[in-house]
Length: 383
Image (tube, rainbow, N blue to C red; front, side, top):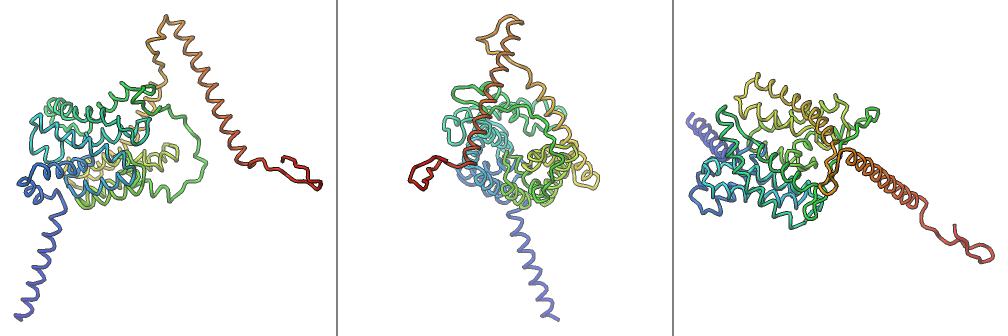
């Protein structure tokens, strides 16, 4: 009898030790956070940076941030480098501005800088490793705590979080200020999407399956399902509930895209999933205590987010059709109208020339290079 009691006691002790070890790495890693407070500022900064990277998707765990960073490097090392720089600059700026130290240590002043850095690299027309892009990245990331603090002073009256609104404001400001034709920091020319009737094309079930992790990866601007898989693993490490709602939200966005007859390419790349994933996570346990009611509300918000994304996208397409004239050509209204017609005509000619050159190149590739043909009399003929 005593041996049985001793054996059960040892098993209970082993289980307790195992669960305590698991708790060191899951959740918000509070024990690690308390230990980091006693270390040097360099170690604290590393902890705050990785927490900030994870806070983009409502997670306060440095190991999760490390996994997400690995996923970013898997997608594009240049994007990951800009994201790390943006997080560092935004965090240091918050320290210099003497923002709440607890909020800084939780990464709440780093995640907007993460998104600013990544998305500025994504939208840059100069491609990867254009080192001058680090300058506007540093400047915009430095402004993140300023904009966040200003918005918080207003949002706190209704007890609302500012979430990623500072990032959206600053990135849109940068894109609007530089534009497509900027000599040093040109942006990708984003044209209004022409609706494509590919509803008759067969859907790939495998691609639809991969669109779920891709949708989670698109929270960071990444379309690789492998990156999305690492992000889901990071969420699972911190909170299985957050991981579950991320997958449910991304799947809901994907199904909404199918229901609205969206382009299959957009669905496969996860563009219909990231807003729904974030909405589902936020309602499903982060800002509300998780119950079956809040779970249903989270799914409804995920579906609504997808529909709102489609509606706003169509609205922005209409706004993009508005022609803004360069100051050097501004004249009276009739002349401005003639200038627009000439501009459209020249663009059509340019597009037709590009199309014809592409067709000629593809035709040459199809026919193969010209090779000499040697006949019976030894004369050379060209095929």
